[in-house]
Image (tube, rainbow, N blue to C red; front, side, top):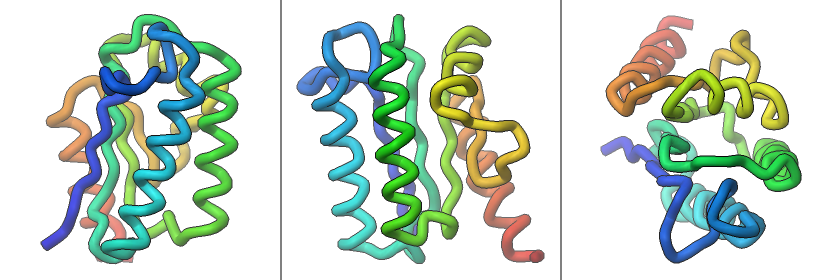
Amino acid sequence: QPFISRFAVTCPQYAPIGDMGNGTLFIEVAYKWLGDLIVCIGTERLYGEIFDFRDVRSFSTDNLIDARKKSRKMNIMMNTQDFPVAMVVANDMQEQILRGPMRIMEENPRKRIVHATEDALAFLDEWHNRSARA
């Protein structure tokens, strides 16, 4: 059974990347949780990740850059190329913020910014269908 990792960026028990305080703790928790999940189930069972940013009202540039560094480190340490990542945003402003400091480029086939959970799930399916044909 494939596993989809869903992480709401504004977990109430941790500071998020944005407006509820210093997001450093949230970033640490999110990437530790994901790393532990990959070790536990393996990348072959991880169908994809969905990060939901819709409840974030503001973003800290420092925290976004820290998240990008942690993401890059995880990409190097673990084979994260085996699964897609969807980021759900509420509006075009959030999308542009993620494209900037997080460097989420439209041409990256493994990552996509979407505006609804249904679009995130559709992207995960599309990515796997495309990967199976390659």
